[in-house]
Image (tube, rainbow, N blue to C red):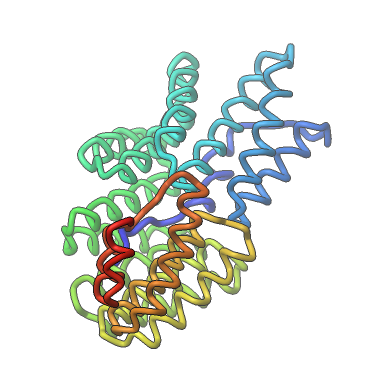
Length: 330
């Protein structure tokens, strides 16, 4: 199964509730709206392009307050988009830029959300201890501010990290605490994300019926909210769980839906990952020619992105199908 990554776009505007970008529809504000729309649609490269254009405009402003607000807002979303695209080092550069600004301004809300996202970046780099340190710092600030939404978001990230460390009992405890907070806030997407976390953790604990039940609950909410990120994430998790159950035909159904959505969104990184999941599943079914076709397509995309993956698995598949000549050049 893949490492659990809970998407967090639902928190962003609310965590930045103290930042005003003005009421007039000037060029930079329009670019921000376009960037947010692209981000929420899962078109992360498009989001980066829009926010970088807005950033350039904000950097030219003479109004210092509006300049700082705009720059940090853009850097925040650019960092999150890089993180979604699998470039945590670029994301960290954006978040550290904001961290230095918020430290100077003693902006506690900005500090907390930036520490949170630095933690997420370190989690994606498998630097879990560094991630937990940043989450602890963020949680301390949110508790001081009595910001229940921020507390819930941070607890969710701590749960994700405990999941990644294979501390499943601890992860379940944190996810249930996250769920309780979002239920108190009547935050539907937060509730769905908590269901996702609880479900995928039950899957790791081989409690598959519970795992599928929670994912189905989450999927129902994500569909009502038209959250493409939530839908694709949940379908992926369901595919992982079905694979864990040994029901690879159902797993393929989930992965194929995910691949189709990412292809429509032109998200090459995620498309490649979903193609690789399909390839892995066919490999497990001993349908090696089909596995090979999906591996090759995924590898082609990774090479275009300069991030080749799973070469060793490709080689194993080739060997299994007795393409020994191909093995020597992979």
